[in-house]
Length: 414
Image (spheres, rainbow, N blue to C red):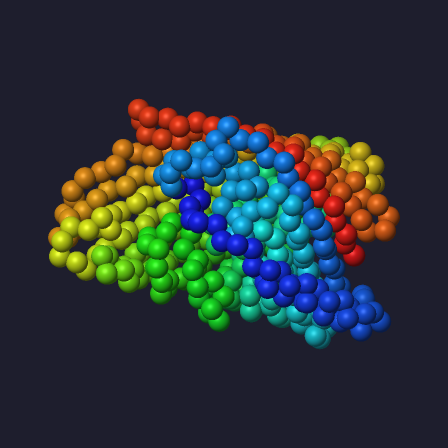
């Protein structure tokens, strides 16, 4: 499926309260460090989002026919129970420990992805061009605007940034990274390679992509390796990024009618290009491509439904234009096209081929427009409108739907 289909749970207010508590703690810390602002910086953001959504299909007719969820509107597979009006909070901090060592924190809570800490790591610069990081480190796979202070969107354009089921390739995890930063003429070249273990410290015990092999599955292995290359032209501000992340995962299925294992591999490539057209007008073009192989094997002698091999091919392309009309006003438009293709094959208890489903596909197109206005006191507002169409099904059977949303965000940051 396009994204994990499951029963939405009630909003976890305790988790949101924990982030608000962190917010207060770091406010105190930033005041304490006020005399050291040149090497330490903390910023905070609180706000409320409200949406008015309209869709031709109010809810998904079936898990495999997610005509509402596939529109990728703000109510699509949220971590907490969806509400038209919901709060959010974010904390971003950099605290220097020594001249060449600092601590970095990025945490956010919202109903889309719940409470998450995408970065809580220590970085040590061994030289001006080489360093290492350890802790909860950010993959830096994509250009998601999650923590950008001047983000012009409520709901981002890029598909890879939209739902919790894709967080395992765009967020962070316990791990270690090595990075370089060198200047070649007018170009700044930054490279990074990392090893990640999301199961460490119970950080992401249920992370398994957008596939749910069984209701009570338990992830026993989740190993990742990734790298990215970022090139910036220092004079023209032209920037490009190439990223790759590989995941090897395994889960056990303890149900009595399954008693099996589910190994999974994932390979994701991400390419982004951003450039100024004029001093006020900027363009960004991105694409991600992910290939997943998921297997499910039962120990039962009878032929269970579990014995399957599923291959998923995902691609998404996004184009954004932003226009800085004034120092306080930012206008943005964006469009995206997402394609998911799934092939599923069934096997006997002896692991011989038995049958094959017809290839299943999902196609989603979105268009968004937004206006952001900032006030001098740290208050800001964003208004966004979006339209979406989707079609999913088999070769001879299509299910289509369409929808739109009007959103408003009121926030405060400092």
